[in-house]
Length: 160
Image (tube, rainbow, N blue to C red; front, side, top):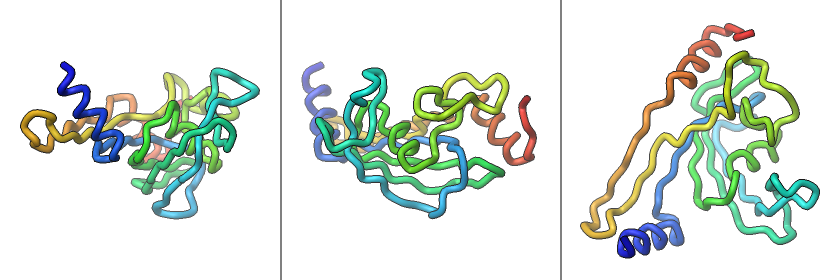
């Protein structure tokens, strides 16, 4: 309804809407945590892609922390301050750590057989209920394919 829509839109506007994601990225991040504060706009060379750019861009902020490190990959937890199209995918790729399985923002095919799509999961969403004012947090467990991938990375098992 309109009340819920306005309440949620206002929370997003003032950054009180919690969004936490988990992802597996290529490579080893140098820092245990960090913030990517880089504007995002449409890629002038490919209308399907977004990119970090100053031209016709909007502010975008992504916070990350390392959850686990594996041979050639890093499991990260990401929190968004803003909500731009493809924000996590663009930001992680811009710092040289694209998401595993992301065919749009990484440079090649996934080294893992059977992986469908990028390894990105909306883990936790937190909102203030627009009518009651109560803080609600919804947590979605990692999907089975994601858990299996983490287990194989932990055991250093290649899927091919």
